[in-house]
Image 1 (tube, rainbow, N blue to C red):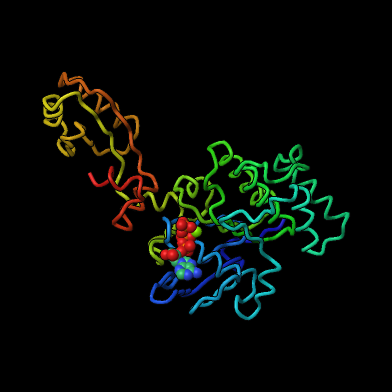
Image 2 (cartoon, helix red, strand yellow):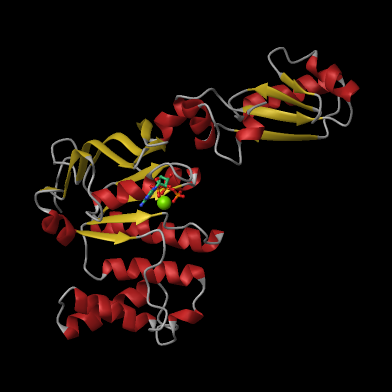
Length: 325
Ligand SMILES: Nc1ncnc2c1ncn2[C@@H]1O[C@H](COP(=O)(O)OP(=O)(O)OP(=O)(O)O)[C@@H](O)[C@H]1O
Ligand SMILES: [Mg+2]
């Protein structure tokens, strides 16, 4: 077992002041990052934040207008071929050839990597097994579901055995079960193979589940970076939301919860609290003592959506309305 300390080993990916504009539009406005080897880094942001652009720059597909970066020990602009030899990229849109079978796609990748035939076949078979695609391997990819294509896409990236993998929105469009399978595969790459993963996502839960460190990208700038726990600690605590059947009940309850915010349209009361059992019990006891009946109750623990709202002043599209209350 190797004993590389994350504090002394040079980062697998580092960037300083990356900038990119298209015409007047500033897409990246000075991005700094450092990703230690053998860890998962998530770049989290809404549509148009600049995630794909960052991946394209770090994987040498496009050049930055300013800034420097090193990937796998190679300077991005001075030694792009060194970077390319060390990385694998799974783009946002599946790169599989639909006319070929899954097996043929993998063998094609092996050929492109100049692997000997026998080694190529061995790797292809191993990857098909690992991704549970063996049965479908000889059918045309045009008959695959979106999730199967996404898995095949990642399998193709792994043919070259890269040490650093860029995954641009690896689970967008996948159903919950396929998403979990993909998460397990990604975790396995890190824990069993020591691979470094740089992934982008719009899913806060995904970053929370997978990443050692998360950077929040908003309109071309990093607005926060840290572990999921660190980011969550930066936002106010959660709350318990009580819904009532009419305004009179709501008003009666509100008298017993000092710091609670009322929503008269929704007939809800938002009681601040950490979402823990004691806080919940206290709320129920107070309702009991006051002889007020709540129709429903939801517990809201702080999540990364809250982080996003706190850090950027605007929520992700789904949560903006709820959090504005
Ligand atoms: N080749 C290009 N020419 C002009 N504008 C571009 C180009 N590529 C990206 N952009 C713009 O840069 C911004 C960031 O795009 P990018 O694809 O990096 O966002 P993203 O965070 O990956 O978004 P999504 O979640 O939708 O994939 C967008 O406003 C986009 O329109
Ligand atoms: Mg994108």
